[in-house]
Image 1 (tube, helix red, strand yellow):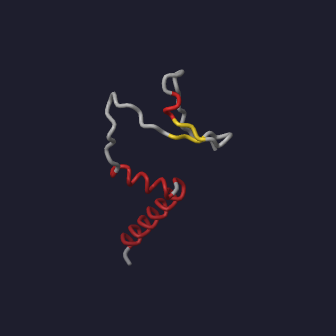
Image 2: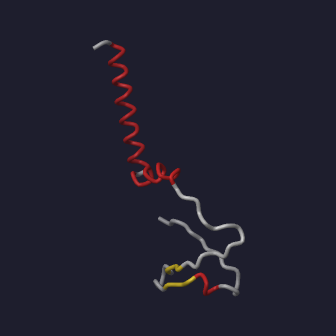
Image 3: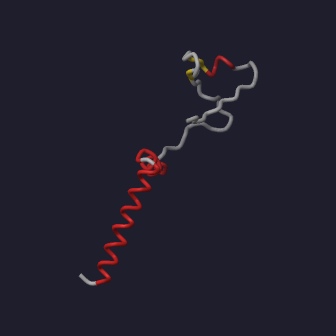
Amino acid sequence: MSRTKKVLVSVAALLVAAGAVVVGWIGPRNVIGMLRYDQREEGRLAVGDAAPDVELVSLGEGRREKLSAYIGEKPLVLIFGSFT
């Protein structure tokens, strides 16, 4: 095998190994999510539409609350986060 082919095979193997490390570091689910990001569908909500009624589960007690139960009271702030 010529020196050029050896170098190309080595570079290709290094790129494959680096890709495997990146997928392992990011996580396979996140990689699949990034690939499917462009395949998402357009939403049906428009500006001025009412928010959909959402049912949430409280963290501490596990009880279910509907968003519509708070209409007309104080302003409602929803915080979505990941705390690990």
